[in-house]
Image 1: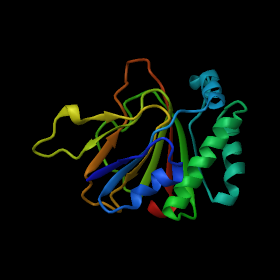
Image 2 (image 1 turned 180 degrees about the horizontal axis):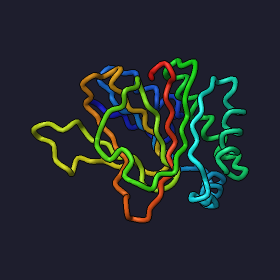
Image 3 (image 1 turned 180 degrees about the vertical axis):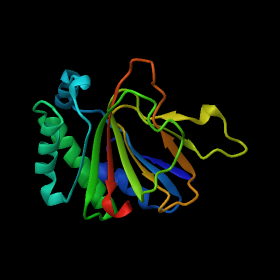
Image 4 (image 1 turned 120 degrees about the horizontal axis):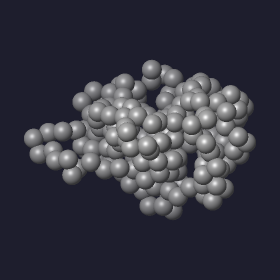
Length: 195
């Protein structure tokens, strides 16, 4: 098992492409969100937004993102649109995917509260607002709760799923936030071939 954390000067494609290495079950790209994106995110009223899910190919990506955000009640957010498009392109390039599914969800519960690996080839996840996804080594005889790590908001993770790793060495979950009053805004990208 290897996790690949890249230096901040590495471009996103280079950072995330490390997921293709044998024995690498999570690739991380630590980043700070730019000021324009942070400003847009701070202005969002999460309680007024719908979750969105849509499928598209790269040629349809910009229009698909714009339409999905509009349909879900988002105000005009050009920096958010650009960031989602950039991450979708990285996912497509790294995995040579032809069609992807994107989900942007407001999470207020303990969604996916158990550590797991998804039934996909690779899943890309980033948290825009709130606590980030938690991950850990698959529990074994030496596993301790202190081994749980939590991604920072903005950090992008690609997790190998069960279609590539039937016996995963890295598991992830949403952090437990039920009854805390916290909300999270999370982007998930999957290749459609991985369903």
